[in-house]
Amino acid sequence: MPKTRWRYRANCLVPEGEQLPSGTLRYAARIEYDGSAYCGWQRQPHCQSVQALVEKALSTVAAEPITVACAGRTDSGVHATHQVIHFDSVAERTSRNWVLGANANLPRDIRCHWAAPVPADFHARFSARSRTYRYVVANRQSPPALGRLALTWESKRLSVPAMKRGARYLKGEQDFSAFRAAGCQSQSPWRFIHYVDVFRVGELVVFEVCANAFLLHMVRNIVGVLLAVGRGERPAEWVGEVLVTRDRRCAAATAPASGLYLVAVEYPAKFELPETKPGPFFISRKLRPRAQV
Image (tube, rainbow, N blue to C red; front, top):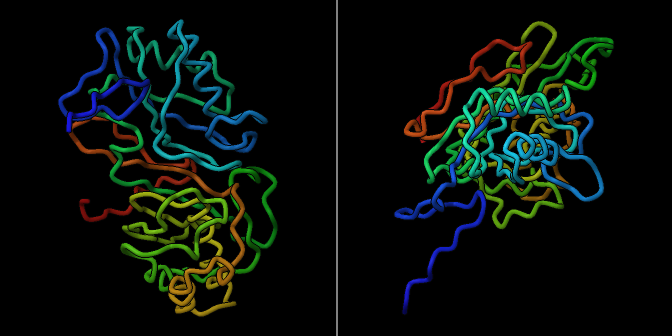
């Protein structure tokens, strides 16, 4: 049977041995955004998205239509300090010009922090080895007036040790159907969680989840279950019990979007992407180390 001929499409995964069309370059960039005012990352016909504004800004810099591919599509109201994108263009611009030009055409709640040329085989989604999210909760008696859209509030004192014990049940490759939203379009509920960490920073409680990929609302559903454990409503063992049911109805309520941040995407070292702090900016703690994929 004759081999099917590969056909190029903008931002597509380039098979081994193939190249981009002559004159076309591939760039990667890091995007940070406050997701409060947007219906998520992905372009939507009925509301404003982060992707649409990023593409519009880059198109202005390139003087040609630009579309982008991303590492992970965040939901409505979710933030990112480290969304990685890539795009193809015949426009030759320096990294500095891409960054300055994009930021000059973006609203103040979306920023481009670096841009760099990458090999044809780089793909923001398919080249990623892992993604890390942080979920931030203000754990105090009164809700904060400042930053109320940047975190979630919980008045009852949370037990970090209990939540850490519960989080142990989530590690490894498992069926996360019980933590999957009804509208999830993924063909498989199986994901590999490298670790789930919980720690305090002053009045903040931070959940840090690293996995190969995530299902729709998966992190927020994990946080919802761990919060029930932290409040003393459920024992730590309940997390494992929820997992084995594979039934979303057996879990807790989904945590609000406002506390969630995409803070890191890991790629093979050969792509030589710039290293950046995970954030958000008010959390200086480094990511927890993990075993290599």
